[in-house]
Length: 194
Image (cartoon, rainbow, N blue to C red):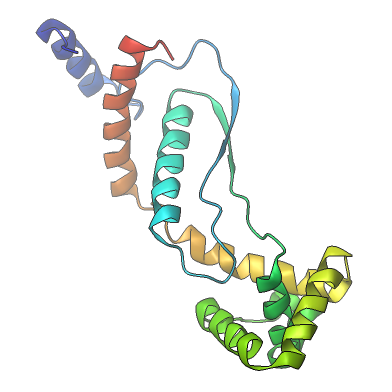
């Protein structure tokens, strides 16, 4: 694909003159509500390159779609209810009992979630009684037991705080991202008519 010099010069000139931060990119003529599901990291575990890759791609797609005027819903599925949750809930029951009460759960500082997960996993592998309690805890969680739900919500909230650190938040990176998006939008507008 090649662009004519006159087209690029006109586009760059319009971008330089436009003062609203949209770089002379017109809003979409057909505004849509678009859901983008991305990342879905595991609770209380470190994010790995697969999560980072889909987070960056998903966040870039969301920013691009918002930039041209679409309403975007960013969906990030967090918190499946497998054995890991049973381990974590039972570990919280022993180490942070306030995390199992809806009234006090939001006041509990869980600290390093990775260390919390590793401690729970170590207990699960070494202690048959703890392993049984963890498996029973998953059943209680799935049944909607208030203590397990409160612990699950505490873990999800603490994990979300960590996940938000991945996103770009300062003005300089937002401006740089907008420049990159403007270039991508120009290409998309000329090729696909978004």
